Amino acid sequence: MRKAPLAVLICITVTLFTASGCMILGKNKENKSFESEKIEQLKPGETTASDVLKLLGTPTSVVKLSNGNAYIFKRVQSKGTGLILFVVNMGYTNTHYDQLVCFFNDQNILTHYGLTMDAENARYGLP
Image 1 (cartoon, rainbow, N blue to C red):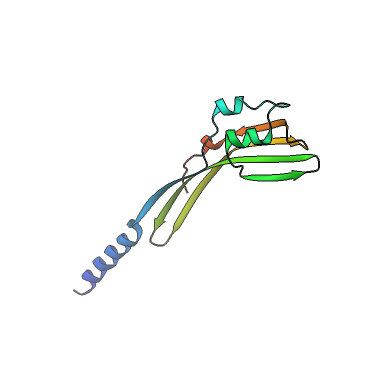
Image 2 (tube, rainbow, N blue to C red):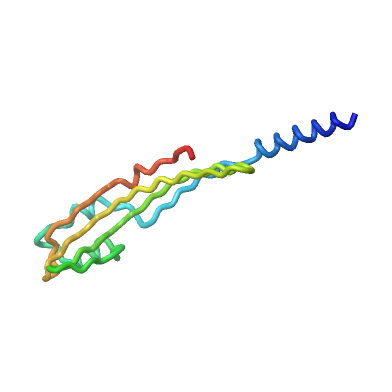
């Protein structure tokens, strides 16, 4: 007689442990996206470093080069999912970047720039 309630209790416990849990979705953005109207205003040989700062704001980082500087503007977008079960936890994060690098000569005139647009490709995925 006592074995039947014990078996039911074990079945209920196992079911609760395996069925309990939650799913988490998250999104993180760092910095604003680049506006194409502002990028089009960058003219190598004409635009100065102060023009770029007025146009785009403070760079993420500044790199001192042997013949000038490089201003790096970066946008990061991450999307993540997590699955939390009683015994097992799993997670997945996908991070992509937009990056604009402006190169200046020793007179602080823009010589050239490079642009990579990939932040919108961040995706949610299964852990």
